[in-house]
Image (tube, rainbow, N blue to C red; front, side, top):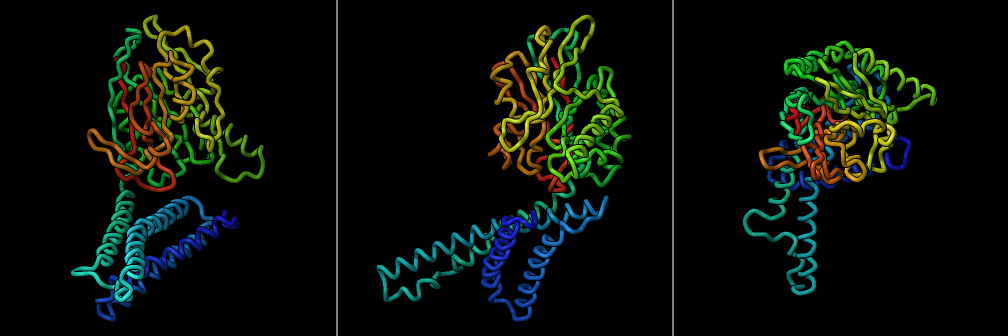
Length: 416
């Protein structure tokens, strides 16, 4: 990526953004003492140029283990600074546009006073007000992202009782633990991750379902965590599917054979942990002579920028005879793209994938995240006629090593 035109365009844009924001810094420090003003302005450029320099050098820091976490954290801080400045720049741009309109209007209608129109405001100037507003908005965002670093292992249990008229009586009251998006390659604190596993086992679930993205890219990312997640167990079993990251599409491989072998190794990891990986197939769950069908597909996406590997028609074969069906499908866009259109007898679909973007607001009666502008269904429970979709907010994290407003989730579902 660093050799692509986009990379250099991004770096050039960051420099221009820094120059633009610096104009506001100068405006806000103009009434300060010479020493204070110089300290603030020099500190601004040290921070800004350090961020750009680190971004240039980051791809070359090829350390393993702890350095991977270091690189991720540094990149998140750089990205946070960038978006903070971008938000602040919106306020500055509004002020510049306001002053430009004022100046043009003065030239056209009040030419005698136009030369002074750029600088005349009564009381606190609107320019200073908007500059402070921009700084506070940008600084607030950056501070929030730093705060979110401490939330990445704060596992939240969300409980749902889901009612279905066609659920066989033998399965009423069955407790399902649903987790998704472990992303073991992002972890740096095994003890903290273990506390989440403890929470799962404390629930004493009848069935545990995992809906994909065990790793970020490579099966070896599970080497330090296989024993930990191998502790997950339930009387009916632990079942899993693959997510988009499990195929190794987002990293470099020396050959297609190496990539294929990585996927095979990842399948072996599932088996070694005692997880039954469903690869476009279904499994019959039986209790007291009654049955339901558990269907698992490889990643299927309704979004063109994600590859689809799964085949629901293949996975569905033989499931029609069962009165109740649960589908495990990683990407929730599969719900509208195929499930509700062609498989109206699938009662419950479980997904993950979105992470709730690891950033948003959730309060009783209201939830918001930028990811909702990409995914119509992005977190929690959704319904279409009698069919239900539940989207887990993710156990792990990727990219940004934190969470703001959208905590890592362990879902407890009781069928009634």
